[in-house]
Length: 133
Figure 1: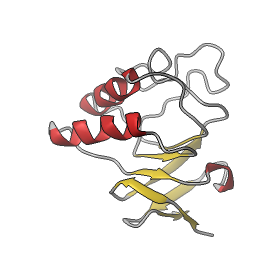
Figure 2: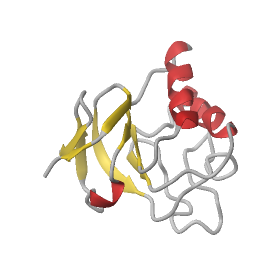
Figure 3: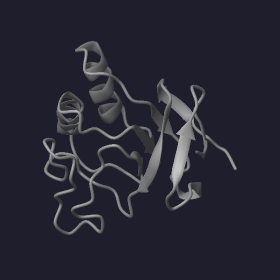
Figure 4: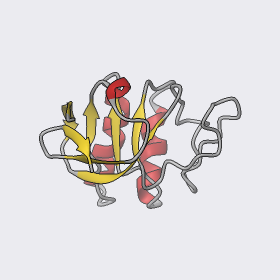
């Protein structure tokens, strides 16, 4: 089964899927040095987003989220890709700035995250297709 998303930042990725149970605030909710979720009341508290294809049911927060994502990319602790239930220009901006500063890039895809499997490997193609990996 392939889920088709809309590409916000182009790229490909393959890796384990981490679908968060609730929206998160990157600012104050994710440690940019470790990639761990630090928001104490979040159901995925202490899970690490690094090296995961991260599916977000939503994002809470301000423009500071792009700075945290930029730091994650600088520290090589970023997710492999972002799959967003709602388009988020702030998170996409963090990825674009990281790319421009030479910290690499990751795909950012707007898609129906509720239709994604609960885990396992997924593969993202250059056109926003998400399939089991």
